[in-house]
Length: 392
Image (tube, rainbow, N blue to C red):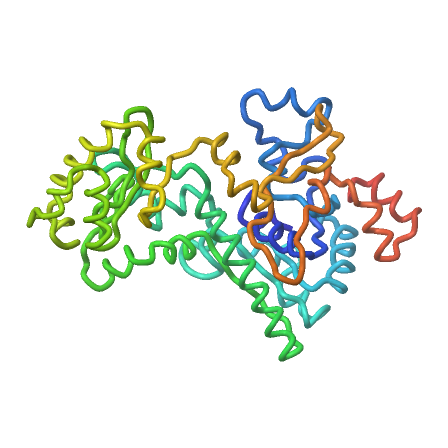
């Protein structure tokens, strides 16, 4: 019962690992992201008007049932599904599921072994608990935007919804932990995760510095607050990233750059000194990197043991030899697309004894409704009644 990104990302991970995930959607409308298309995308979908690449990115390996849980008969169907389910994931504002008669206490009486995962903007308690949660708002209120961007520029939103995605990651791990606990105790439990708390936790070292030193964080662009050099550098034709995480690597780097004397400069003798004089060092390194192309620098750095890499666009990211070697592009049949095929990002975790797979393309809205209702023993005449009354 989750929509948009954090919940669907969480459940897609579980689906990729083999779970039978049923996506419960509102009849007629479905998940809002079914309609979130980029410029020019509509032409690729032919006559299908309730599907997008955004939705497809986080809803593969799932079945879709449309169900109006505001209707008494719709709630009854959901309760029947809960009886045989291991996990329920929802991302309504706290208290909304209780208004539907579908809160944890109610469902736990029906299925005591149920893992009930709630994802919200701010968590179940506190003064902000009833506020809706959005990635960019949580990223703003919990510090991410404050530390992202160039030092002399405005706060910058990351290119993907990191707070939403990370909340999904946290929640999927919590679900697996709760399932393991159930093996020991035989009991389910409620999980309460939020975008705000996730984003606070993602501040990691930045947060720990402030909590203990009250030293306010600032924006560093691609640079690192406690490692210098560690940043993006403009080359003759594009950009690359490179760093030196210790004194040995620093001397190695400046030697490869052809400015070995910099390694003997007392201003840059230790990481602490390099942090103190970061602007002066960055200016020197900028002058070095711009003298050659990115490819020339990559060849020079190859085999050096240094951390480095080009800043790739999407084409070069997915043409990367490692992406091919690790099966990070997969393709499934999808008749809704004009070309009949959907390419999708592969599963990023590989198991030694089991194989993850893209078993199913993303579902059309309500595509599996009858199939799922039949599985819980519903007769065809009852299904017809639910359809006529817009319950499914």
